[in-house]
Length: 317
Image 1 (cartoon, helix red, strand yellow):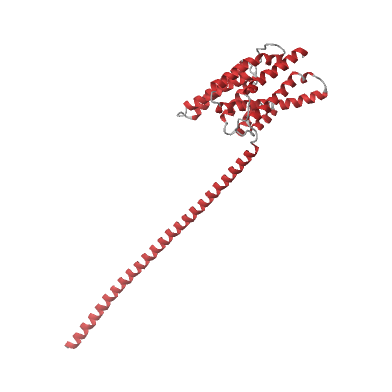
Image 2: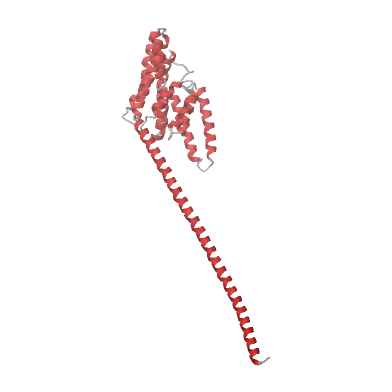
């Protein structure tokens, strides 16, 4: 083999080696490019997914926010409507309600003193009507008592006044209801209201002292106090006895939501269904005291009882 052939073969071998190396380099480059493209695609897909999730979260957040705002607005509208409705029916002041109660009480006492003893059909019908109207008084009086507890500036004087006029009213009350000067087995409503006032005063004072304790303990203690007060009212033969105690407690408990107290109050004196008229009238209370005459407020009770009692004893009914 001459030198030319050797050179030619060497050149061919060199070309073959260069081609193989080129192919390997090209393959490696292709693989790197492929991996790079795949990585970019993967990153793109990940970013796309992240952006998608972010968009979904943003949309959900915006949607939830709109729903929340809509619900809040609806609730505000409902509350505003309820407030407007309440304002529409809250027409009567404390004084006006008290005078309605006075009229109801007078009708009831006139009925119990005279009309129930007559057998005339017309008077029997009138007596039944008067009995219905007479059930309005007590719910108003005890509701105003609880209201007075929260608003009076001197609770001791309030309690003392009830007790004093209870003593003053006892003989007229016995004359009117029993046709005697003294009946120990039936005592007037002033003593009942005084007992209820003392009870809610004690319960309210314990509520403030037991603020750091679990709330159920205060409820438990208050139930015990109510039970004891009911026994006292029954043993003292107070007018409306345990019914008044329970109603006073529920009115105190639901002072800010009087409508919730109504079913509890009705259950407390279910034998007097027409008392609902009185509790219903209290929903019209506008929170204002109104023009009142304290002397009339306290003297009306013993004076009208005294007049009816004298008439009854004179007529021998």
